[in-house]
Image 1 (cartoon, rainbow, N blue to C red):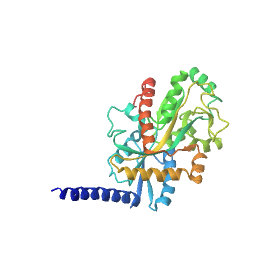
Image 2 (tube, rainbow, N blue to C red):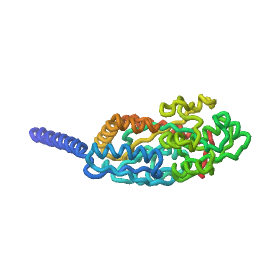
Image 3 (cartoon, rainbow, N blue to C red):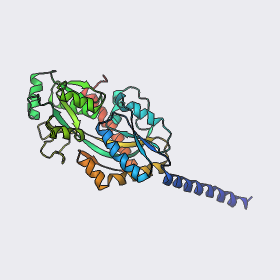
Image 4 (cartoon, one colour):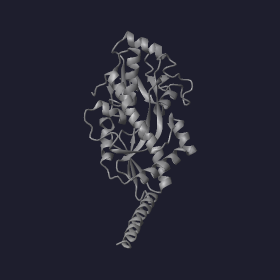
Length: 326
């Protein structure tokens, strides 16, 4: 029996080592087929644009096609739920946007757990918004807009991509900090919300810089401020909201990649490392930065901590603003 124990122990150790080697080899061999990045919002918005920029580079990096699959609806929950229930093999990923940590505060029952049902991969970009108005709006500055809204309570409409989107939260924080009464008009996607501003169906819109900048340059809309604490490099002549008179105002969001919970740690780590490498490429950084999206690229652990922090942060904002699902 004494002689048998070392042999048994050796066999167990060999199995463990072999399993680790196979697992590592499996991670190195991924992806073994096309990869799908589910974008839980419509085509044409900032999340979709960023996903397509990243997907193009990942296709080159992995030698496998990376497909962007738009599944809009229910504040991102339809697409997110599909990924939460997908096979945890690293071939189905989710590009989330700021609604992801907000939804737990808006809905009493989600079809998934925002934290437990996903494996964080990396934060891709941070997102700053611009407050833009239809040219027919006489206000040329934030103080003028506040004065106009107070003189005409409930007369100005703002568009947003559904309830709980970053644009919706930015507007609600603006309302609560300035004491104005604006009417929320939700739309299915960013293109529809932008179109409503151009037609003057809505008068103001907190839009992502990546989509607002072309409209501003074309003279189709007027920009009054950005929502970050300081001016943004892509719009250096535009004041930050706090600088424009709304003290303490700071509404920034992010886009990031998640995998289904249960995806092997080594596959998540490889996915994260590859994406961080892509986000450091000069041409990718230039494409994103020029359009107002700031590349990040962090570890799964760092991104996970940010998600948990933001779930708590937005819960307070939602409660203080009295936001209800419409």
